[in-house]
Amino acid sequence: MAWMYKHIPTTCFFLVVCYLTIKVVPILGEKAPHTQFQVEPKPNCQSSGPIIGSHKLERVSNRCSPNANLTKTPPSGKLVNTNQTRVRSINKKQNRHHYRYSLSDNEYDPNADYGLFTVKISLGTPQQYYNLIVDTGSRWTWVRCRFCREGCKSDDPPYDPSKSLCDYTLTIPFRASYDDNSFAKGIWGCDNLTIDDFGSIMNFQFGCALENYDRNGDNFVNAAGILGLGKGKWSLTSQSGASMQVFSYFVPENGGGADLQFGDKAREKSNTCTNQFTPMVQRIDQEKYHIDLVGISVDGNELNVPSTEFMSRGTIIDSGTTITRLPEVVYSALRDAVRQSMSSYTLLDEIDDLMDTCYSLEGLIEPIAFPEIKFHFGEVNTIDVILTKEGTIWRKDVTVNCLAFAVAESYSIIGIVQQRGFNVLYDLEGETIGFGTNCT
Image (cartoon, one colour):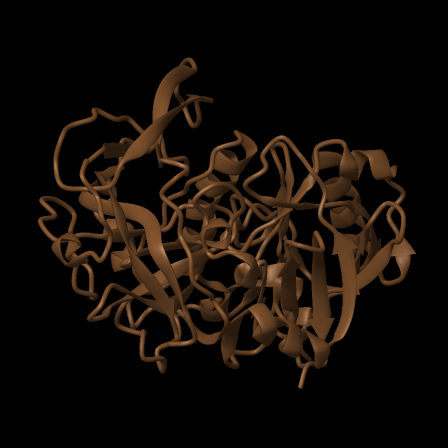
């Protein structure tokens, strides 16, 4: 979901910022494009301090995790449907999205581990702790703040800007409006940010939310905020200096522990893996991570689709999108190949609004066997990345498994499901993304 910032400068008690005007493309029913203003801190308000080391990621949905009662992944159907809004937002070149829905402890969720990931950070001294959703698809980091007036509920205490260690003299408000009339608004914040006691970013700039309205009444699933790992000015990577130009996360295949690594720790973790690297490529939307998906194979047979069908619109790798989206021509070829391979199973008609290749598990003695799917990345030095079994299947319920892919409206997007079982390394200096397996 896209954030659309409005501003009215007022003299008050906060940091100095400058204005950058951007044009926002309409999404989900808006009739015409219109102009908003995006507020950013001044270039001379610099951040410093190393981010080195690692931190354990908590799956939002893991009921055994310390964060189990903080923010919960939505039921799988709602997760995918809500995620469709994010996909539309990405395809409209927006840079924000909306997380919503809560999961009842009594509700069956076969995809619990496919959900969002949170990491604990702290702000200020003494430290104030927050669990933030990890998001490589957006550059902004924001938290709910003290003096919040609406939509303030979170299982973490609100951030208190009066305890900030920064020097600031001016308050600039922002307003983030969603296509469904949800919104968040507040002021820019500035404080020292620490992750896992390994290091800090001094004078870190972030959004301080004071009013939040979720039209669906789900309050951004009660998360304290978002940790933006995207590219661009005022992202976490840009504010942290050289030490944060490499990071990685491990996405467990079968409910194991996930982790987020930074700097030397990320390289050390990667060195224990069997890695394949593909270069990042430049696209219009420079806040996201683009790579070249040039082909797909099913059970060793490459789809008969020209590489231009894959590359003409580009491919994003995104931790905040659930299932992978492909151009219609590519998706149709993939779907047909999978259906042919699985012709002995019972194909269900119109069982899911988004995924159209779903199979019944009723009466099966052996587990259902989806074919091997292999991604081919890189136009020059092509690498072959074989998806794990859990990177192929969406478990709709106890009796239905679906092919975890759907049609893209524009960009191809590699979702978090297809990243399961990989240590995914982002090397911003080397401009490469690595897929690691068999890590120790």
